[in-house]
Image (tube, rainbow, N blue to C red; front, side, top):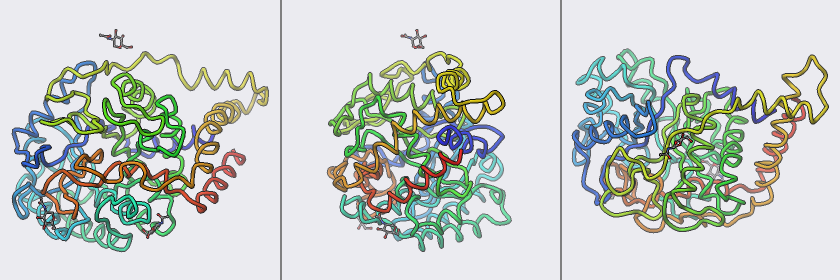
Amino acid sequence: MYLTTALAFALSLSPAAAVSKGFNYGSTHNDGSFKNQDDFQNEFKTAKGLVGTEGFTSARLYTMIQGGTTNTPISAIPAAIQEKTTLLLGLWASGDTFNDEVAALKSAIDTYGDDFAKLVVGISVGSEDLYRDSTTGIQALAGIGKGPDVIVDYIKTVRSAISGTSLAKAPVGHVDTWTAYANDSNSAVIDNCDFLGLDAYPYFQNTQSNAVSSGKSLFQDAINRVTAHANGKPIWVTETGWPVSGKTENLGIPSTENAKTYWDDVGCGLLFDKVNTWWYILQDADGTTPNPSFGITGTSLTTTPLYNLTCPAVTSTSTSSSATGTASSGSSTGGSTGASTGASTGASTGASTGFATSPGSATGTPGSSGTGSSGVTPTPTPGSNASGTPGSSSTTPTSPAHTGAATSVSASMTGVVAALFALIVAF
Ligand SMILES: *[C@@H]1O[C@H](CO)[C@@H](O)[C@H](O)[C@H]1NC(C)=O
Ligand SMILES: *[C@@H]1O[C@H](CO)[C@@H](O)[C@H](O)[C@H]1NC(C)=O
Ligand SMILES: *[C@@H]1O[C@H](CO)[C@@H](O)[C@H](O)[C@H]1NC(C)=O
């Protein structure tokens, strides 16, 4: 029940208007050169024409600054205007160039006016800064981060920068891992956000039983943990995906087949057209193939994906499955169908996900997932290099770790689990 409710809750709080669906877009190519407007336009066009899908018409960005400039607005903006692609803007917060990010934002507002403003779904201040600045992130050599005080300060700066402009009503939030949101030291960030952007990768949760068959339950667990700390703020899924190739992370095996399973289970099953979602990633192999590689179009930008993206037909999901649950659990009395059905569904899911798996694995080796090793960054963190400089090489060690999140959970997690359990019981 809790799981079901949590998700339903997150959904109901998403902007009623249109649900955003799209991909993440870095500001550089794999060789570190900067994308220009044509590059972004080709990507946005490809996303819209992706065989087997429709409506991947939103783009999440990591920086407002066009590569190679001080504070010129990123050329993804005119590209998005041309392609009618909506935008989750991002201001890179972990470098020392935040003022330039804000200047580029203001300049974009002045330069592109309402054509731009009407495409903006939200503004994210930072990306995984809290994770990188945490004990786990530091151990994982995840790169430069920023603490909660700085992020809160930056959020306020952005609110003041957009006040009285065409973007005044744009939701302002932050993107991070579930461990960052579940960490009470970061609660001021949540308090200051209009939405919480969540990056979650079961593939990297290598201290847990993370076969792709567990992908959906691990993902749901991440949502639940954030929900438990969200104070009702909407949760947007800013990154998730499964690699098509690359190294194995415990039971997490990259392959096109597994990537499809994850797409079907998590994308089609939980997210698309229900929750604002920016999948990771359309093309992740621009020139050289990263390891792991998450790109669904392989090494060239093409509308032909590496695997079938058509969502499986829906077999009257929750209603029928919960109905079954009710019957078999026998716990329901006629009147309370809703509650008891939920309970039976949720119970089984819950048991197999977070509650059973995470506490035990909480002691896992921090940073064992990506370790921020090579230039390969499953977290695009495009606009940054290891020092967190926007616009520089995409080879940043901001890695995978962000998911590795799971590995960080420690004793404090017990409390969270207990709280979740209490909620379940309450339901
Ligand atoms: C919790 O958050 C604080 C502030 O961001 C950070 O310093 C600390 O390392 C985090 N704790 C863990 C276990 O990640
Ligand atoms: C792709 O998947 C859909 C849904 O399962 C199916 O109907 C379709 O036949 C598949 N297409 C191909 C080319 O296999
Ligand atoms: C990375 O950032 C550092 C610190 O800002 C900067 O000195 C360096 O030139 C950057 N590296 C690249 C490749 O841009």
